[in-house]
Length: 266
Image (cartoon, rainbow, N blue to C red; front, top):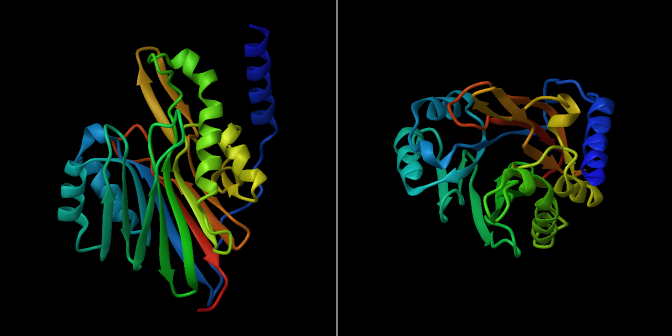
């Protein structure tokens, strides 16, 4: 039990010290910028009109989806195929599917299987932008649930698994390319996987603008539980100018949208 109290105290201390370090601004004139959405659409809500509407109205350049299914793919191609020229999906068991919608051409790259203990793969793709190639990793890390289905023990047992997943995926990235890493991390900015990103020079953008903004909520009989589980991380070659959470859609996750500048020439 002392370990439990120590970990909770550390989390509360970190939360209390957090503060915004950036303010939203308009992209600089003449500099290429990319608007990205990361959204866990919930595999049990395939075709939900409110979720489709959120994606359509946000009209981002690049949309990275988690928990997609064949039924989700059918609905998205039907409803959004005219808005996005490039759409691709990789399906897995249960909630393991990933999707990409883009206004820019991209190379699908590789599907990276998780290490032991990880439930879902990650998807590396290469985006062809006017400022040069951008590497993007769409991922869904292990939920804080134990193998036996316990949320309580899973909360404390799965940090290391997510950190291993992140380390495994990072090894497959090209360090010479500007990179975005986005998706459902299933942990807050104080988690081990996010820490592993920081060690490699990446930063999660949302806490820089809104340290306390939740991206996930779950309604229970005693109230609503919420947390910041979704992230868009970037490396030093990209600059975030605005990151926000859209309070819409029926999924338990909320869509996370970020605008990033990339200075470079083809």
